[in-house]
Length: 157
Image 1 (cartoon, rainbow, N blue to C red):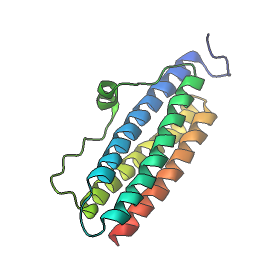
Image 2 (cartoon, rainbow, N blue to C red):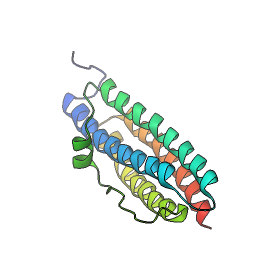
Image 3 (tube, helix red, strand yellow):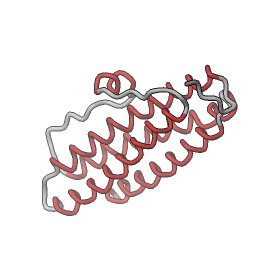
Image 4 (tube, helix red, strand yellow):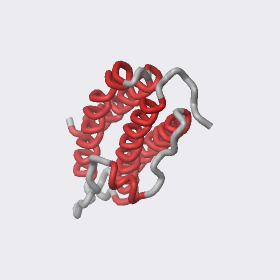
């Protein structure tokens, strides 16, 4: 059934596709954060193991909400690893050293990259596609990533 919420169908499709790219970024970041949680080593292992766990749990909730936002707009989200890797602008983590600072630097870089991408879309969602709801939604995502990036950055200071 077609969604009739006062936004043109082509705009709903464009926003949904864009949100699919954000979903892919979030899923790749989630996976990289899980890797940090599973593979971190060193004298700060326990502390960082728990820290990375809190971060991936927050990302898990964000992923679910993005997919549900896409569904609310009448479209289906990408759901396979192949789709996520094709849509993301992030790269997979290929670290040999499992120290916490290395993981933190890699994850911080990805959060900052996502922040830039989110900022680039806030106004276009509202002004070009007339979807203030999705614009507001990704503003909320931006705020969550800002806090997560701050938490990561604080470990490096």
